[in-house]
Amino acid sequence: MPDHGELTFIIGGARSGKSAHAEALATALPSPWTYIATAEAYDEEMRERIALHRTRRGEGWSTIDAPLDLADALEALPDNQPVLVDCLTLWLTNHMLADHDLEQECRRLADVLSRPSGPWFVVSNEVGQGIVPDNALARRFRDAAGRLNQQVAAIADTVLLMVAGLPLKVK
Image 1 (cartoon, rainbow, N blue to C red):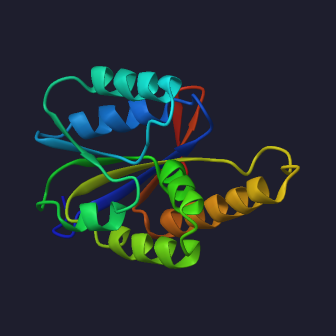
Image 2: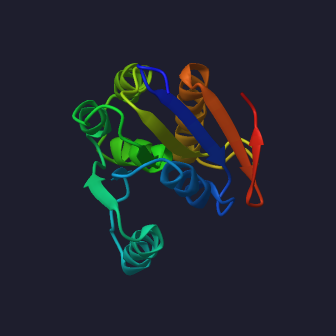
Image 3: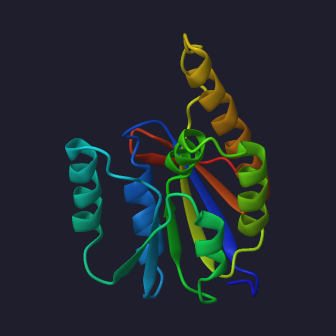
C-alpha cells in the first residue's frame, strides 16, 4: 500500500450493494476497521436500517458517528487503518437541512479525502440517472450530490459503480 493511503469511491443507486461491497473490501484488509456513519435516525425506519448495518458488520468494527463533521473525523484517524464512510449523500443532506454552505463543506471534505491516511472506502448514491425532480429543493440536492460525486471521483484512486450487486470498475 502506498505511504499516502488510497481512496476507493463506491457509487451506485439505492440497494445496489454499495455498502456490503465496501464492507467486503475493507474487511479483506487487516483489522481494526473503522466505520464512519453519516446517518441520523429521525424515525423508527431509519433506526432499523442503522441497526441492520451494525449487525451485518459484526465484530471488529469501531463506529464513529459524523453526520456533519466528517472531515474532522477523517483527519483524526490513525494512519494505515481501513476506513469505510457511509455515505456522502446522507452527509450532504444533513448539511442541506442545517442550511450550511454546501460548496465550502464539500471543498473541505474533498481536500481531506485527497489525502487519505490509509485505505479509505467512501460510499455515495448516484442520483443523477433519474428524472429531473419536480421541486427546487430536490433539484438543488441532486445538483449538489452530482457535483460532490464528481469531485470525489476525480481524486479517488479507484471508482467502482455498483449495479445489481455487481461492481463495475470505472477508474
